[in-house]
Structures are given as C-alpha cells and as structure tokens.
Image (cartoon, rainbow, N blue to C red; front, side, top):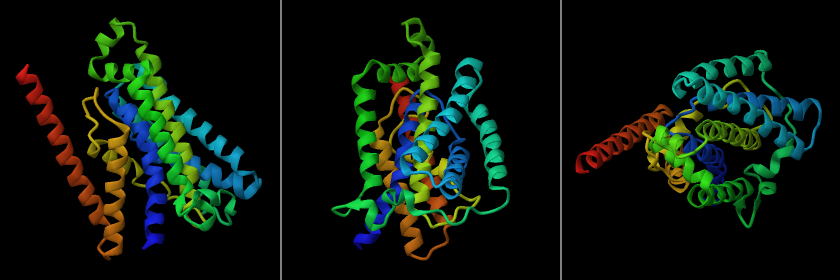
Length: 288
C-alpha cells in the first residue's frame, strides 16, 4: 500500500510540474497542446545523452530544461509576436516537435539507460522518509509559482492579460513579453518533467513517451478551476486536479478495467468543469 502511494506521487510529479506552466498559459487565455511532443523531444535527447555520453545528472537535467525552454519560447514568439491563436500555433508545433522526436528515435528504442536519474524515480534512492524527491520538487515549485502569481507584479500581469489583453496593454503591461515568458516557462518545466518521466520508467524508452500528457495536463488545470477564458486560476487547484487525474488512471489500472476508461472519465471531468466555468462566466456577466 505504501509503495503504491509512493508510485502515485512519482507519477503525479510530471503532470503536476507541467500543470504549473500550463496554468500560467491558460490564465493568459492561451493554451499549449504541444507539451506531449516537447516531452518526447526532451526525453529522447536526455536518454541519448545518458546512454551515449555518460553525462551526470545535473548537466543532463539542465540541458533538458534548456531544450524545453527553447521549444516553449518558439511557441511564445509565434503567439505573442505573430498574433496567431495559440491553439493553431501549438497544434502546428506539436506536429513539428513530434517529427523531430521521431527522427531522433530513428524507429528504435533507446536501451540501456543508466540509473543516473534514479533519485527522481520511485526506487529507494528516490525518496526520503518515504516521500519521493520528485514529489517534493513539485511541491516546492508549486509554492514558488503560487507566491509569484499572487504577490508579484509579473504574476498579477498574467491575470490582467487573460482578463482583458487590450486593457492590460493600455495600462502599461508588456503583454508580448509576459506571454512569451509563460510559454517558455511551460517548456522549461516540461524539460524537467521529461527527466522525472525517464527516472520513473525502465531502462528503455520508446516513441510512446509523452503520449496523452497534454490531455492529462490540460485536464488537471481545467478541473482545478482555471478558467479557459483566462484571467482566473490557481496552481494549487491545478495540482489537486492532477492528483484526481492520476488517481483515476491508477484506479482504472488496479481494477483491471480497460485503460481507455481513464480517458473517458477525464474527458467527462473536462466537459463538466468547462461547462461549469462557462455558466459561471455567463452568470457573472448577466448579474453586472
């Protein structure tokens, strides 16, 4: 029972970490559906570095985060300065990043991944007093993000952009820079999540890595109360949403049900959460 709880916390960490960045993006009334492909690219590059160069944990993690940040910044540049809807840009880059990831895989699995990142996994080396290091990293990042969004001007500017972008720009907010930063941050956190994903797996990595993570992350954020219309949301709610999503997935697996049922339940949760948000927004407008 304890091991199952520890495994759940390790599986929760990547989704929770990515949900931090996704919360910032959706607060600005944007969205990033390319994070699964970004995760694939970061994961395969990290795995290749570990197997071919024998590089240490710290430089590998930094490279993965820098790569993710670069890919996220590409999204941010196109969205902020190209004035193209985020869903269109990230749908396009998702296919581009996926192509890059598949080319790096070259139709082969990456085998013999050393346990360099074992301290981020579910094993004994990856926990202290029974609590996984990956989960503790997520908790620290959530706390930092919550403080930033609530108590720093930059965080409040993200809410202002999502609430009314034109009004925020007239008030002196550098909208483009903040939007770019939100997507770059998301990519950076995806790079970290990729390292935890590798640590939580086996010694092999295949082309399915990251599959479905965009659905799980967006579901966590929306279920956690972040408005898809922008201007409202909390990283604390997003982490609770991630916990619900992972608990459902784990429960379906343990009960021996078809894994597709987990996606069904998550889809229902998203529809209910978005519907409730739209009803709340409509009621707020009519009551003014």
